[in-house]
Amino acid sequence: MEALVKLRESDSTKEIKSTSIVAAHKDSLDELIGNIFWPSEPTQENRKALRKIFQFTIKSKALSNYRSGIVIAGFGEDEICPAPRTMETDGMVEKFLKHCSPRDFDIGRDDNHAVIMPFAQQEMVRRFMEGIDPEFHAYFGELFLEQLVLFGKGILEAHGLANDEFLARIRNVAEAQSSSYLKRARKFQNDRFIVPIMEIVRHLPKEELGGMAEALVNLTSLKRRVSQEQETVGGPVDVAVISKGDGFIWVKRKHYFDPSLNLHYVENRSRLCARGEYG
Image 1 (cartoon, rainbow, N blue to C red):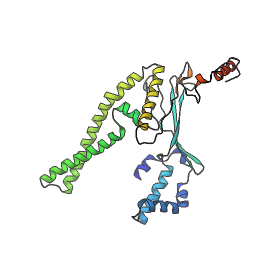
Image 2: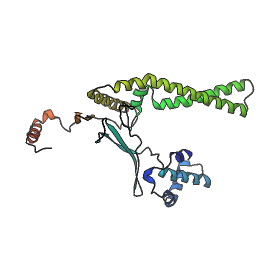
Image 3: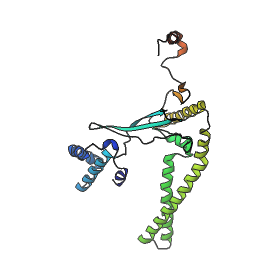
Image 4: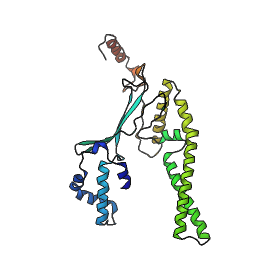
């Protein structure tokens, strides 16, 4: 609950009366809580706390795993470099659309010269950028701390000193050392993997940027196809490049038919375009 409170409310949910929603669905919530914790029976105090968590969840900036989103990239009237605008939504809550814009980013000459922004299924892009799977990285950090604590506990037990006070000190020291280690590891990761890639990306020509984006999408598609995960990325990939001088340019675009087998269609559309009758 503390984590939800720290996230604060989403601006899009300020008008939502979450207390009324919880009260209206109290019976359904209690039934759901009972099913989740069966065969244990939560106390009334625990049920009240869980309903409070649900109330915070409704209005918090945290979105569920069922969220969806949209990304728009391009130029406004004043932008010299392209800028993406994003929106993620959990759908409708009462008559309001719950949404947030978590990842807006502006490319500039002075500070942010380039960025690679993965959306939705991010793990393969992050492996490419960071040199390690993000889920494994998180697990390794937890495991490293646990092993430090167990190592210190083993030494205390070997000398007959394993009391609560010394164990608490061991955990405090382990947490400090683990944090220091992970900071050094992140710095190495940034210097060795992320920065060199970004230095290259900022100087790539437009067509190679499009090719790189396509390769990263195809990498994610391949990983989903050969694993037991849900195949949410796949099929032919459309590639477009947006620039201030050329505007929106298709680099690769799939068709629902093979143009080489339908030359009459291509010829008809070409004649219409030449006469200005087909936009």
